[in-house]
Length: 491
Image (cartoon, rainbow, N blue to C red; front, side):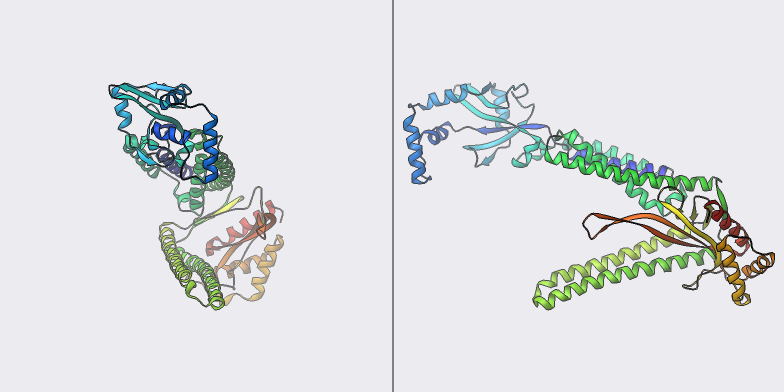
């Protein structure tokens, strides 16, 4: 499981780095310069920018109230809210904040940390900062701004994410050291080179990302926010899906470890370098043919759609989509070629091991499991290589001495699961030495897909067919293994 641990650790470290980088200050204080004359005029004098009816209404409301001088208006405002008196140093620190012009206030607005000068012990979320000196009585309005409201304010980055400038180098060093330790962590070579490697890595990283989506609303204090609920829901679903996927992949990894540990093994062999190169070449050709066909179909469909729109519209608006499709197709093709080359190099480093057990098999990096929930074995038989495609064959193969009756007799006897006459055994054994043979295994996996994109699940059994080339000296052992599989699964 060290391969799974490696990628989960890498994903977790990356998620922790993202949490650290985007971890906001819990809140800041917004400080506004206060223009009492402008506020008094707006309160008690009609504005020329208003419509005549609005100005008349405002003038009527003003006349209905008793006259208040500017000094009385200021004292009334201060008496209704909290006032924090600052000394000269604290007042100067607040004034040194980065103030920006704000159309919502009569002047300029700035932001100070939650534990800013004079505000560390503030008991009210909004009020006034005051300073009395020889020049007069000065005031500024302050308001508590939680992290949820940062998007509506121009909070400087240094105040929004204070830990970046202070601890970013240390955090980056710890993160790099952790990822480096995960990359040098010893892993199972066979798992790292198998078909489970990419899937396991993706699921492990998704599990770490799901934990991030579930945890960040609690760490950031956003549990009561809509975004927090959505993140917890999506993260929970992703956590369940990735957890179940890792559980299934973990069973296959455990099966591979048991096979190479000698448990429940039916047969095992290693290709010679010559035969392994031939088998690897055939697998590469099959893989390239299927992926190239898919690439051609998708590209042609996209070009046909562009052509239909061009004939219908006749304008140059399809030029940009056409360029995008051509570039995307070229990039896809380059990635396919890179993947083929990478896979070919990886297969050249493999010894070409084949291990077949009661629960599944490991065939030169390909892992298949046909026991357990959601799978069932359909058949296992040793037969001649398929005529529908170019068979893998050792260089010394000579199929001219095998007649049709002997081949048919071998296949029928194996499919029925009964014992063949000794003469048939001897004929099949003699012929098998002179031709290529494969161990054909068929099993099904329970699958589902959404019908018509409407979320209606359709369940079905997806058939998987395997053809494992068998060396001439292993044909008898392969026949016995196939018979034991049919007997074990009552086929």
